[in-house]
Amino acid sequence: MKRYLFRRLLLLVPVVWGVSTLVFLFLYLIPGDPVEIMLGETAQAADKTLLRQELGLDRPVHLRYLEFLGGLVRGDLGSSFYFKQKVLRTILERYPATLELALAAMVVAIIIAVPLGIISAIRQYSLIDNTSMFLALIGVSMPNFWLGPLLILIFSIQLNLLPVSGREGVASLILPAITLGTALAAILSRMTRASMLEVLRDEYITTARAKGLKEKVVILRHALRNALIPIITVIGLQSGALLSGAIITETIFSWPGIGRLLIQAIETRDYPLVQGCVLVISFSYVVVNLLTDILYAYVDPRIRYEQGLA
Image (cartoon, rainbow, N blue to C red; front, top):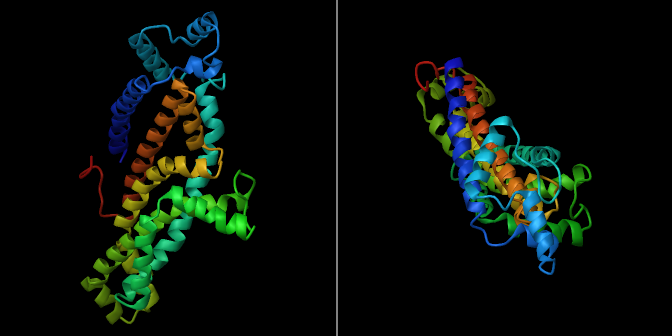
């Protein structure tokens, strides 16, 4: 296991370097001058030149790139043009809000999807099964930028039950979490159903029932545990997608997270902040995948990293 973890951590280096390089290069292809955005097009040429020198935008791109990589090695992501403070500090102030939203969306998805998938598998082709799979198809098809405003119109404006935006307690978290977790719940319910159906056909399930075990024990202890590997895979992969999907959801609900911060950084051409946000999201995605692989060993003891994956 230690060998496997060490090798996976080493793989983070080229991944982070590749993502940071692509982001750095793509940012300078975006039209627009951050100096003009900050000072306005009517500002004096001398003021623009002075600010460009202060921000280091007058230096060649390759020198800025090398400086960026050097700072990345030291854990210094630079300073934000717009917020006038260290990028890492700005991101750390917003990152907890994004984690809170992603975890809430994950909880919503698991609470809805796993029981629904199990029931659908047990009662295959029944009304419950057909209805749940139809709703799952609708959930996958609904984009966040459509579902979010719809929930606001119904529960905030018409029924006046929940806040429209902001982060002011549990009530403010409900609509964003449902918006972000709906697509994951739809995907997860279908995967749970498919995995459970495959396991329920195995001979050891028939043997467990023949021994007189209660159906609840057969389903939860024997069938569900052996069906968890594909489910965990989907949860792990989609956890990273939740962080990127939070960009739209946080913008809709004015949620003060890293997704909304990234949009603000793009609008103001705040190059260091955009790079920092993308790097943090990418690194989070990789870490979640690593934790998912480690969780495999706990769920299925037959997996041996030293012999197989390592």
